[in-house]
Image 1 (cartoon, rainbow, N blue to C red):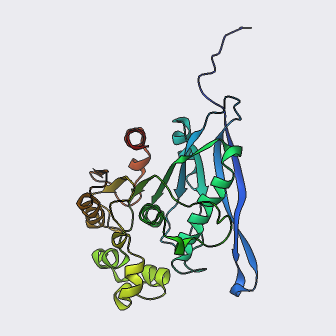
Image 2: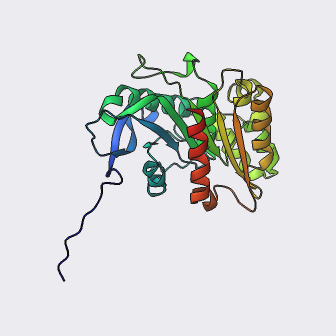
Image 3: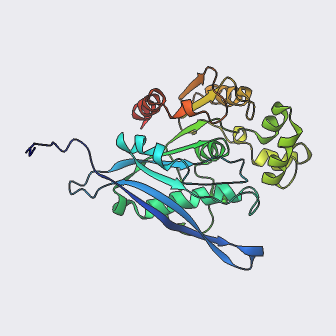
Length: 283
């Protein structure tokens, strides 16, 4: 049966642009060069000069095994809410120690700022969001605005500053997280990340501890954690929230009952709505 219908243009068409090289870094034994990539979910080219806020996403994986596109399908929900999504690859701890991962994600932000016209991005509305190890990187981005020692590589004429953080199941202080798990098998994760066990390298751990950088200029934080997280226990999120509150930083701290580490509950519409409402309130 033939039907002719009217269809309104209620939402933009979304496009995925993947495998974009945003930086080049040392490769095999520092004798070669490798590319770092990102994927973008963007709105089809518009001609009204509209600019979109952008969410940079950092996947988890204990800094040891990273598949940056693993949640690309889930991130479409945020694109439908009016964001450009930038899904970032960063080097794992088998390739580089801290602060290499932080340097990578800052390089991704600088690259996207250099391409903001192409992707119709509002560079004053930049959100860093991640889970677990990626949540740690989002947190570090939120507390190191203006600290130039972490900016290396390309596009240094652009700032890596961001405007808001969303972290879930996020590592905070490597030492506290390692000790709070009460599981010796997790020691390797933090030793691999820092190059030494956190309890054997207090100066290095202090440099990697976001709590050490929080001050009155820190950006707003949305913190999401599960009551049953045995990998990064809830006490870590409590400490982050308390330090932010002590410095009068706008913070929303959501604890999800029965949720485990990187729980699928965190991708549900209720959480997506809470996150986007918080973002709208502060940027």
